[in-house]
Length: 231
Image 1 (tube, rainbow, N blue to C red):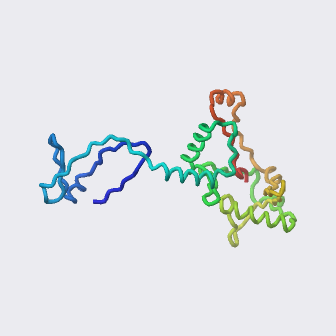
Image 2: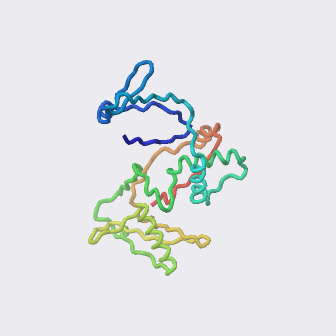
Image 3: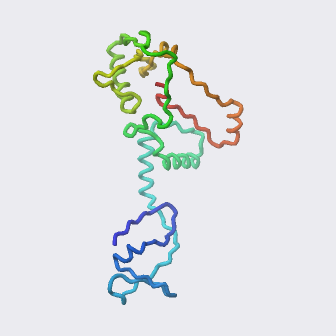
């Protein structure tokens, strides 16, 4: 009889529920008299007693701490944690980040695009589109072309862009440039022509005062920025 044992944080031992089919296959008979016991197979003289244990199961903390140290070293090495936090608060913050580590993307496991929040762009003109929406690429230096290729491959890996297949009709093309800031490059699309023919989305923006009121009792305030959120 195969049994899979799972050790959970701060759990107590509980009864294992086995179905009748499982009991019949392995010949398990349960006697529910005052002295409860069960037998296995044809040997009914060999009785097995039930153990009623409520002792808390301790977690192998050394293994968990090792995984947590690897998480801090590999995924939090660029994180900027407030230095004014006390050691206890810093430890609690790292515990929360480690517990929800699957909510963070990494180079090996990128998030990609957010599912369910795709935006469809509607144009206020009919086909065929004017030539201004089919613009050629801007000239670029070898350094800019190298950076551009790197950004494009990254966006393809994230699922933001896809390659155009052979003989696929492309109705709208937009040139891009590379913007540099302290030797760091950023790809920038020139969507001015496209924006001229785009129907704007109108949605209510939360009032600043209402947002600040909702944050009045917050103990922690986290500032997050979407990666490549506009494309």
